Amino acid sequence: MLLQREAEFISLHAAQHERVLHYVLRRVGDVEVARELTADVFRIAWQRSEDEPTTDIAWLFGVARNVIGNEYRGIRRRRELMLKLADGVRAAAPSDGEVEATVAETLGKLRPRDREILMLHFWDRLSTAEISATLGCTENSVSVRVHRAKRAFAAAMPPELRTGHMDKAGDHSHGQD
Figure 1 (tube, helix red, strand yellow):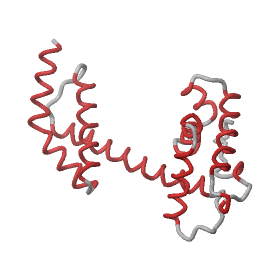
Figure 2 (tube, helix red, strand yellow; figure 1 turned 135 degrees about the vertical axis):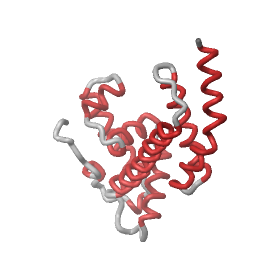
Figure 3 (cartoon, one colour; figure 1 turned 90 degrees about the horizontal axis):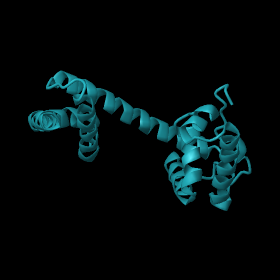
């Protein structure tokens, strides 16, 4: 059964890959991004092939459309995260691009654990309860980790850009915290 499934999928990939790639490329305009997203489309097709094998190009285009939407939402969330974290940066940075670069650089200096909790909280907009379920820890632990990660972020910012108000930067409670 698996060999037949693999053969059918290889046939689907060979027959439709170029069409899906061109569909995605026309919408995102970047070859590398289009390749990554097309790979995601076929990953989803493979995962679904066990339950619902399909050779329907319309279905693949529908999956591609959803994958592209997810990519754009991710880009928007990343931009929003940068802006929220940049709330603690003085207006000394003359442009949003420089602020985003500073925020990205600062995030890169953090421990992976701190970076992860900030990304879940600010970028993915998860509540404390949702982060707790995602990470498999208590809500209290999440609250402490978010607080410590904010402090680590503030400490990692260039001194001339700190305002001392990082605990309030991008604060949101989702009404559930």
